[in-house]
Length: 368
Image (cartoon, rainbow, N blue to C red; front, side, top):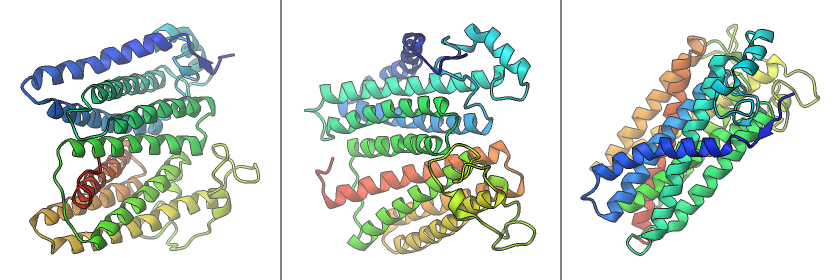
């Protein structure tokens, strides 16, 4: 029987992460030799943000290809640092269940996700060290990078729980939100290294925070849809299915948060009505967020050229999310559309984070 936690390959994985993260770090060092130290820190933060965004997308790809248990232990694969060292075990598992959770392809997808995560963790560690070493030379508190380092370590712990708890929906959803939280933290810091205050009225400042909160809630609902495989519970638009606008739904079982995958509040199998409730809740949330973006963009439109540019970006991402979300339903959940929808959600949250950082800089210039 495979041990769920086997730390024997951990040193090799960390070394591989340092090697993987060292490449972009060396490229950045060569590219920014003439930059100031503050500019170098900002460049490193933006690079880490970009790679974290890629990691979030690859995490979605791992989930969408059912590769989350491609290696049924953590942090390695059957106690090895790569699927190459676990060929016999993977072959045996694949022979027993050819379409099961463990195959050679799924094992590689899962381990590549872990390699990328370790590389991002290495870059965040470097960012933290550099922030403390140069804390007197910038106006961004090094505690931001420290919080980010603690956050990414927690992400690693949730990654382990995702495997050991067999894709427990609440854990998988929290793991997704944790990855998006890294984007928020890195975006906030990157904007702090290049202050560019965006002055709007107090009402719009509060509205921006309200939109941010709505977006986080909607992304959490989207994660709950994905981790419960409820995307196709409604196979039509704007109706749900069979021409129904308000089909039979079971919110109690669908939104029992602490339960195993496919299991309801009573311990029985999760019903189709419960999956429909999960899907419809996400649709209603999407309607609210889309309306909020339209209202906020309308309010920004009359506040000058800079505010109008932010409104255009928000409207573009809203249109992207609408198109990719509809594609998931009408095209039977293709991976490309699902990845586009996840990427749009991550981009929207990152954009709002940059905007809020600028609004905060206008309200309290020394906030970072």
